[in-house]
Image (cartoon, rainbow, N blue to C red; front, side, top):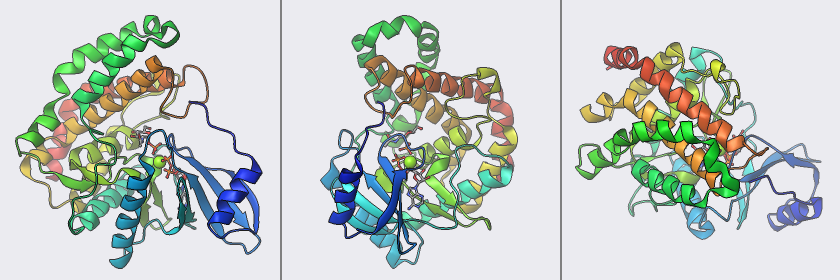
Length: 344
Ligand code: ADP
Ligand code: GN1
Ligand code: MG
């Protein structure tokens, strides 16, 4: 879906509803695929993040409760997190986190290490959120077999005859189908525990300062899940040699030195993992990347109704980079497993 345009009047009204009226500049910010995010400058020199929640995807009332609950819990613990300054559905206002950088691609292993430490700490910090269980903000969010079912539905839609362009991708998907259920089945059997997880651990959902301290953001999908899907999405995004929408597939692969830094950082922080979780860390990278690949492909076949897109084939390009990443991880599977064993 291409990004919606907002008039300055609409943005001003949203800001006014949350008590801000001295803005000097409000403009699109970041590279998230879901919400509409703006950076706000004011006469006072204070900056904000203004965000319109994606109402097609989220139950906004449920989401608001979840965000307020999680952020207040972290604040009470003294953990630096998103600071909610206003929330008038579907709009919300966050303090702009000054002094931190978000990036879309890792440039040296240290950054991968920082990302992994940050998400491991986040999982630790959230582990003792008091009852009741957090809401399933998006049910079956990381249920890869269900994502395959959604892909099959999307094939029936075949928007603008796009199916004809994806035969090779569908062949790859079919070769991978038998692997899709491993984590959900292990969870159903109780071999892998349900934990409070972030569920969207892509690299631009963590802001890192020069000294390596980090703040985990984009808390919309913080809900019960598996630590493995969190680790898997770190592998997908923080070991990638190129952007998620790189068109030249020869430039797309998973970098072993980044994987090693991620494993080291994650295992240093995530002391709670059980044996089954540790044994599936390398696999989780392949599975999470496959899952996001089929989600991009399904969105392409449905006519780009979910992710923000900037051009016609954007979701197809993204799906292809994901499948290339899976293949690259498969080619290095033995080395990746050996790295995990080294740090366990
Ligand atoms: P989406 O759900 O669309 O991915 P995010 O909540 O991740 O939206 O926000 C998009 C981007 O905006 C982030 O990747 C980050 O670069 C930036 N961002 C979000 N919140 C803040 C904040 N409080 N301070 C600074 N930058 C932020
Ligand atoms: C979306 O919101 P953002 O851009 O951080 C998506 C993730 C995908 C990711 C792929 C709520 O993340 O699940 O992995 O795009 N978020 C939602 O880049 O669907
Ligand atoms: Mg995001």
